[in-house]
Image 1 (cartoon, rainbow, N blue to C red):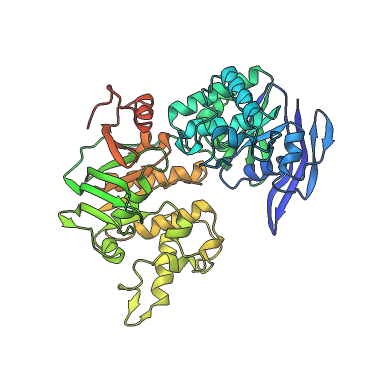
Image 2: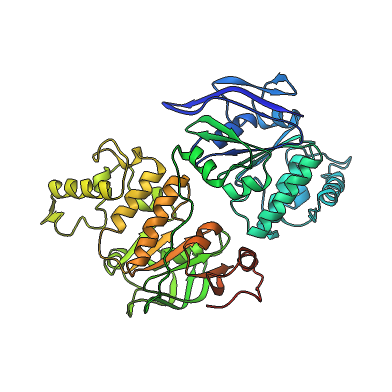
Length: 505
């Protein structure tokens, strides 16, 4: 079955999310759609699946126009979708999730799960999924939950399968398994639309690649194109994808954690007795699949977590118990996981956001008033230094693109005396051009003798920037390895499997 999109257009107010997009995927083909976050990829697929209504354009299946106003219309036409954030009920079994919305009752009005179990086992055997129909979803690893989502589509005879950022929460081994599944589906004639921003995966599995930039298809390519060529199409300029990390020896420990435990509101340990140290002039990466305690660890360093035990010291001074204000002034720079929630005040001007942590200090503060002249002068300087693209420094920071918002956070945090930089998911949602800039600034801090804690779920980022890597699994630091570790060894650790080859650093 083939799927064709003709002149699909969608506007959200003044924003044109999709601008007359044409796209065609044939039966037995993997068609990758590549683009930066916010380029319009997910909006386009939500239109195909009936979650968003287009303003204009048409969808064709096997050359015939169809009308899709809701997901049931898409499923009826043979179109299935696996969303980036899984649509599963954790307390339900696999079989119960599969029949949700398609429930059938026995004569005694009891839910009939037998046929679902049979179909799940059939598809699992066909594709090597090894999924137990009676397993609770909440007890399944993330990679297996994703297979459940794929089974949900296939069990209702999807001939076109949309995969929206399917590897975002997977370990490297789970990603490799997913790519194998995609190849098997292709062999059996399924058309696959693969939405991603990961160049390595596109080149490994795609038959054809469409690049979307700012809502438009700006080019098509074959997987024989280099990663540099694809990246350039994504952002519209040449991009250096290699982080230029110099060789240097680390200095004395700056940040030291001993038996660090962080509890949630119910008293459960989300980080359990973590021990690590970060030395001057090195990048210690905290790697792991999202949700294993890394976010809480980053927040605890800056004293954003309430229930913290153990010890965390900066240059010999205990940090636990300090206010956030005092933690910043002790020399911690913090790039939060969510720049919108924790890094910026959207309604404040760009200039004001650049002094959020220094507004009460000279030269910005004069008694109970703030010097507008100094604030504007500082903003002009930082905008130039960090290449922040804007209309006016007095515009609200919410008016900026994601990459430029992140540059505002970087400019503010790195423009005061810093001993430790804590960077949590620093390139999430950024295009490859902005990623290049952020990586350069992180390595510049390292080379200037600062200690850097990098928390990232992006394995390529960890491998490129880290001098040492601490792997977190279920709240514990499973191992700390040096930068010579392989992707395979690191992936095993992220899945909770100790690697004998991994050298402890």
